[in-house]
Length: 163
Image (cartoon, rainbow, N blue to C red; front, side):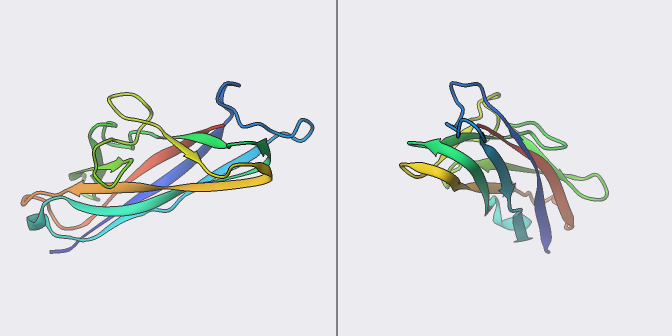
């Protein structure tokens, strides 16, 4: 039995309040973008219990003049679930439980700071003049059960950065 599961990411970048903002060049300002690769659970075996996969979120900014640059990264609930109980769906509308975590121990759900979830600070570098980029690993876990029907399950979540 083989189940292929793929998470797609929609991406959004916004400017944060001044307390959280990057320090930017006075004339040009900052421009930031975010990208994320899909978390692909391949060959999921419903008899093996929870199974893991990883992906990355990358942030790339220009115009940064900062001593310790960082941005806050949020991930929304996805299309069919909640932040604390995300769901993927197949073509027949069957659902499969999964979630995205901040660490390999799967102790903290990566979300938007609600429902017991945490946002993540992506940082890197000590002194940045101009271009800055950093990335962070996302830890996905799918919770298949013996009743899971084989197929392709997907969900789309929005990754947002505040800078």
